[in-house]
Structures are given as structure tokens and as C-alpha cells.
Image (cartoon, rainbow, N blue to C red; front, side, top):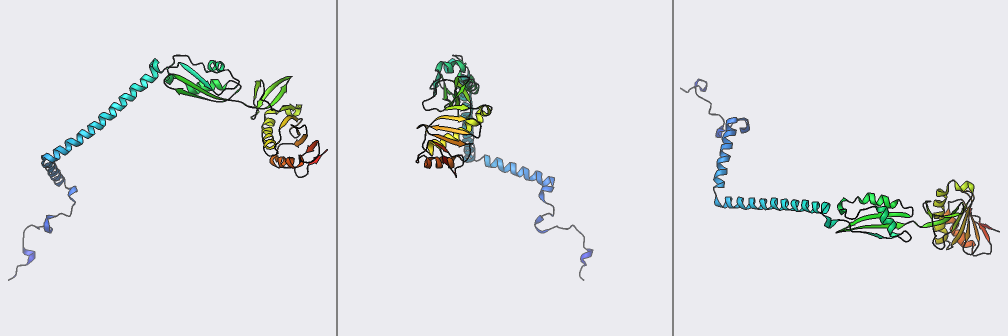
Length: 281
């Protein structure tokens, strides 16, 4: 007689191999046992002399790196303190380069840097702003020149035209900035403006900068004098005495090309305000 399996008693042996449907990580007891095994394995591994020696070498390398970084930081800190406070790195000389007409003493006075001031304490931007306040200065750069010098490099403004203001000649650069009286470089044109043009002198001078560039570069002519009664009536007097009625600024390259051609023909006064139809008289 065969026993009915339903009549048999006992516990279910579970899945083959003793595995469980629940992941081991969900069982606190198994997690604790696994951690105990890992700790035991680590102790056994660290008991190996070769492993201990390798760990010691690794720690020494790490320590050397940290010590080196610490030394570098200390050296940098000491260097910064020395530069900022010690008089050995203080201003003894203020060197000026670039000026043609501005006395170096004027630049040094305007820079207003006290001798003995540590270089690192000098506000180079503030010094540059003070020097840029000199009317003739166009660009200025201030640099620390260790161990004990401050270098000021500047570019002076260049006069594009000389303008008569109440009987006094003023120098005006290509940006239309009047930077005061003075002797203009040889060949600088005299600008004469009418009342209508005088109210907008900076813009007119900026337009003339382009006109001059085209007349000199394209037509190959020098200019000695410019009359501007209104912004639309620019009249140029060339180096050979001939007169060019330019009209208003604009289409300057076309006008310069036409001017180069017409000046090869007889004529004292040329009108190129319309480059398509130049006329002379």
C-alpha cells in the first residue's frame, strides 16, 4: 500500500541549495553575518606581511603629498606677506615711458604714489585713472616691476586738426576730443568751422578722420586746411593749393577715387560731392 503524500508530516526543506526567495540584504541577521565575515577576511588579509608593507608605502606616499602641499601653502603665505608688508619690495622708482611732450615729472606727480609704499599695496587702476586725467594722455598702463619699481606706460593723443577757438589754437584728436593748446605736429590741417558746425564739433571731427584717411591713402593728397560752414559743406584745401568741395561726409572712398582721377586734369576747384558727376571751375 502506497502512502498518500498528503498524509505525510514534516517541514518543507525549501528550495534546493538552501537559497531563499528574499534577497539577503532584506535579512538583518544575514547582513550582520556577512559584515562579520568581511571584517574577518580583512583581518586575515591585513595579517599578511606583504599587504601590510604595501599599505605602509601607500600611507607614506599620501603623507608626503600632504606635507608637500602644506609646505607650498606656507611658502606662498610667507611670500605674500613679504610682498605686502616688507620694505624691500616697496616703491623706490616710478618709471615713465612713452610721452613725447608731457614732462615725466608731471606724470609722476599725477600718479601720486608715495615712495616706500609696498608694491602690492599700490592700486594700479587708481594710478592709471589719475594719469589718464592729463588731457594729452590717450592710453595709460601701470605695472608693478619687482622688486622696487612702478612702470607707467602711456600713449599721447595725436592731433588730427588744429581749431582756432577765440584766437587760440586748440589741438583736437580723431575722436573729437580737444586736449588743449600746444604745438601741433607739422602737416596738421587747420580747421575753420562756421557757427552751424561749431555746435557739433566732435562729430564733425570724427567724420573728418575718415575723409582725411581716404584723401591721403586713396587719392595720395595732403590737406593743409579744412572749412566746414555746415556739416554738409566740407571744403578741403590740398597741399598744392587746389580746393576740393567734398560736401557732407559719406561715400568717402568713392569721392577719393574720383578725386584721384580728376586731379590729373586742369582745374583749381573741384566738386566731388556727387562722385558720379564731378565738376570743376
